Length: 250
Image 1: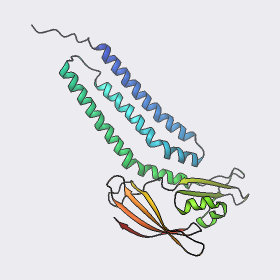
Image 2 (image 1 turned 180 degrees about the horizontal axis):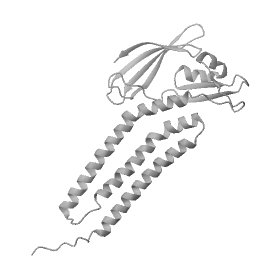
Image 3 (image 1 turned 90 degrees about the vertical axis):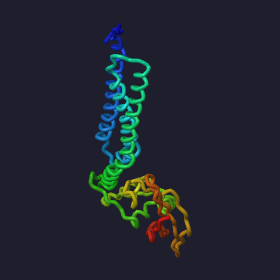
């Protein structure tokens, strides 16, 4: 005689798995909504720039992982019959599919999404700042003009490209706002694979600049995706100006 299988024996597990899936999806949606609302409530362009740059990809990745975990539970919320073989098959299949989806999302966030972020950050960085004194748009000073408002330490940071400063000035009142940006924070587009994964990994000062003589800096680049390497020689001046004079792959 065939053993009669109770179709409801796993109802408690199925209900729990569905509840976990729904809870995971709700948490993922709330994380995204929190991120969006926080961005919408930020009026300062620099604060929004820093928040997007520091948190957006990480926030999306956390939400994606929770979403995938929820999907894995939901896929196992319709169990009617279960045995050792089915446990192995279901467990392995769920884990494998979850990992594949997670890896696809991770690659999208790591190699494609930065293109989108870079465009938004560029808009935010050069969006005209409003003077708190007059309520009018301020002027972004040029490299030569901004040196008058940067101390020697700040200029030294710009000379070696570790930090970049933007100086905004209200020409009517003289009010000045200085914004600090990381010089090596963002990757460039790789000339080999075209992904936004080409970064400065090391710098060498070949010759220090003096008031009467230019210096020389060698910048080493490497692509985090395809491994393509290149180096560029940069001319340094005391004023903070520079020129990229040559490039060679290695």
